[in-house]
Length: 216
Image 1 (cartoon, rainbow, N blue to C red):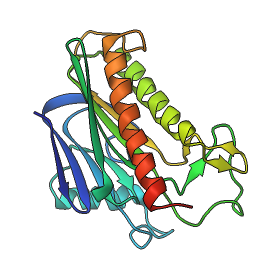
Image 2 (image 1 turned 180 degrees about the horizontal axis):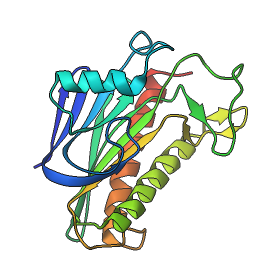
Image 3 (image 1 turned 90 degrees about the vertical axis):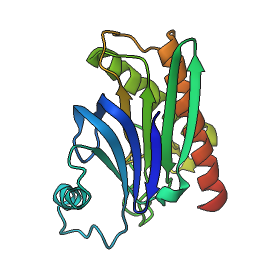
Image 4 (image 1 turned 90 degrees about the horizontal axis):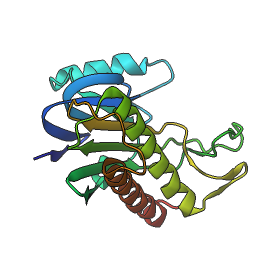
């Protein structure tokens, strides 16, 4: 049974077994094997302009003995995390997310420094499925999570000078699955449906919470 554990400033998703994880997280990005995905909440004073983020995070991770974990960074209060699950046929998916929207952009454009707020936010999403996937399947599953994230943000209808926001400039997605031979996780598959629904539902809930409690 996957366990989500909050121990501020850390949020941990304990997979209970070694799984393959695909992400572009700061700590252990790419295809890796691990039994833990972590969030580390940060503040501006943690990461001044002269701090090497990767080195700083590696030191923080060593302090808690989690060098093998995949670790994402967020300025959003990790206590605001939400969890959603979905089941389709014999496939299940659990999605965990934190969402901060102060760093929004529209895909294909960039706000000018004058248009940007001097604060950082990010959308971090981890999805765990029981469907054994190959690396090819994991890549497609990652695209489904990203599509779900984007859909939830688009539906919020947040207008920027460059158009309707589609995400933040520092979003991160991590997808975890047992190692297997399934090469497909698209929208026509049970795994694609379950992964997409859980990811959409959790980002939608987090976006709603941020807009209600941290408006522009």
